[in-house]
Image (cartoon, rainbow, N blue to C red; front, top):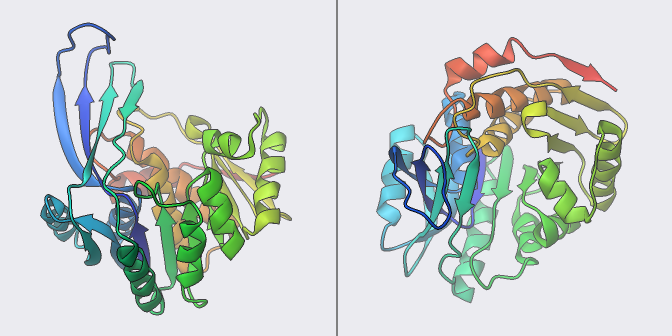
Amino acid sequence: MILTVCLSPSVDVTIELDSLNVGKLNVVKSKTLSFTGKALNVAIGVSRLGGDAYATGFMYNENGAMFERALDKEGVPFAFVWNSGRVRENYKCIDNKSMLTEINDTGERVANEKLVELLQMIRNLSSRSDVTVISGSLPRGVDASYYRELFRAVSPNSLKIADTEGARLFAALEAGVDLVKPNLEELENTLGREFRSKEECLVGCRELLDRGAKRVLLSLGKDGAIITDGSRNYFCKSINVAVNSTVGAGDGMVAAAANMLQKGADLPDVLRAGVAAGTATVTTFGTVSFTKNKYEEIYQNLQVTEF
């Protein structure tokens, strides 16, 4: 089983426009609502690959039932820590050049006893999970150090994947993780400098390895991705596809990587699967994950090289 922990679910309102004109009237071409959150997207991706996913995390009383229905539709079982209030709403505006503009809400606060309850739920569920994925932002007012406590709660028999950035990522690394999946912007924001080549990116990845990661899967967006464990380094270039939306691409990458790690795959196969799923996701509009057919089509056309 692959356990995914969603700390900050969201209702994503994806709006398609001809162009986003700031300070002027904008007419919506299409609008899609997704009941999502980074780790929930991962669970859906795992399920679409035929894997056994289980979702947990925080949920909210006023509109949480819509998330339950969305997960039921995808065949993903779940158990949440419930809170008063309403799930936050994020707005994602996509123009005719596939330029994405995001407006993210901060969400509700979570009581201290609920933080403790989630740690206990992770202890119980991760004890029967091969992989545990914890990703995304934290509820308003929760300190980044909570990420350290979350990963310390994971069973030692479960592989640990972190997908977050900045102080949250550093906190997770203090607990030790088997894989981290930043994108280039997140790596630069976390380490406070730019990386302009694959070799420079490797230097940044090694800093994360030195801090407690066993593997780093670095997304380079449309250029592909890098994976390293500090002694072996691989690059996979993506293929050209029609980009409809970049929403959820990183989550698709994590889903496929988690699926491969569960199977005991080596670095090149983890990388190739991650790039295939991330690329397949960007071909969709207004959905939170990829289709298995598109994933398999892209996977067959990818090449991994060592450098």
